[in-house]
Image (cartoon, rainbow over all chains, first blue to last red; front, top):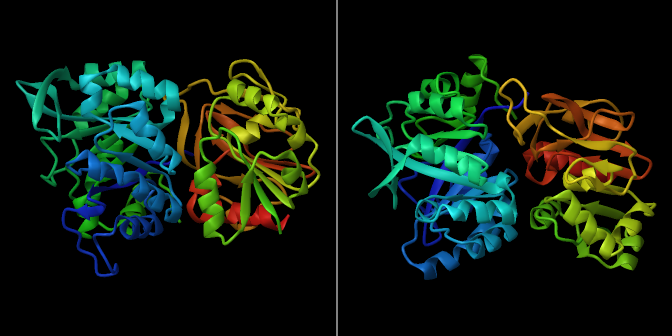
Amino acid sequence: MLTKRIIPCLDIKDGRTVKGVNFVNIRDAGDPVELGTLYAQQGADELVFLDISATNEQRKTFASLVRDIARHINIPFTVGGGISSVADVAPLLEAGADKVSINSAAVRNPNLIDELSRAFGAQCIVLAIDARKIDNLWTVHTHGGKNPTDKKLFSWAKEAQERGAGEILFTSMDHDGTKSGFANDPLGKLYEMLQIPVIASGGAGTKEHFIDAFVLGKADAALAASIFHFGEVKIPELKSFLKSKEINVRMN
Amino acid sequence: MKFVIIKYNAGNIQSVSFALERLGIDFTITDNAEEIMKADKVLFPGVGEASTTMAYLRDKKLDQVITNLKQPVLGICLGMQLMCKYSEENNTDCMGIFGESVKLFIPKDNLKVPHMGWNNLTLSSGWLDPAIENQFAYFVHSYYVPVNSYTSAITEYINPFSAAMHKDNFYAVQFHPEKSAKTGELVLKSFLKV
């Protein structure tokens, strides 16, 4: 039976992980390869590496980091951050990434989804959507949540599927950082209307929140960052807990 | 031992070579027929679309080279599908090492296509390490090979299908051992031992 996936997310700036990382059993919390390897050993099902470097120059070095990640990590991983063309994606996949995630550039130019999907296959195109509720409408934001757009979550997710996205990574900005649980209502609605997998993101605080995302939100996967980095929720314990609650997860 | 990865436009060559590197295996990546024929073991990776990939292999005459190999050959993902007789993906005639036809998953009971993620393996025969029984492997595919007399592991998604096969010197897996953590390493080690 296909399992629900647990996905730690690492933000990378100038080749180093950012946001605090609080591990005792890791020598260098800033090294994305070492942290990713640790998560893989702990039973993470996939990893996401987001490059938040400010300049294009720094982004160019990202492909060599991706190669280093692929060399050491034996589970699938997605990379993203600032991708806006077929030419941006090719070196990342050639370096060993399994999927790429796109966000702002796809909002600006929705054709990018079609182009990437045709060039590399739908299975490696993850459309990331950051949205928050404004006047009761889930409004899509770009540039790390800074800029509101005209697009609405549900119609944009549907359009992305039709254009050839292989997965939707939905981050609720209203839940992100609150540790009060995932946005299960819109997740459930995305499940009803889409045929492609949905990754829940934003709001993870406890192990129970993952149960809710999978049962109420019907998400295919759940992504989190700080609770894993700070060890508030440990992946092996999370997976044992999910299994005890009859959620189908991969145990290793 | 001389280990060769067949070089063609497959998307996962880098990941496969890193996986072999992690196991400490020396290998060459080549599309040179003589070099492939001289190898002790051959790995045939694959991520992509069936018809364009078959056309490329025919153009380079690699389809004949692979079909006539006598040493152990491991096909991965699309590699396994191309070793079959025919694929529904753009009505493609394939190499025919296995006499089976590759079929498109028809979505059922909210099960999405492609089949993407970790799923468990039930071993039915032979070459795979028994420790792999009921362990999880990483799959990404929309087409599958039905269970047949050459099936050596079964996975269930929409319907039971061949997760691994074996016939004579030809071995194949539908999942990605290069991305399947410890289980994937056991699969590659199993192939090293055949």
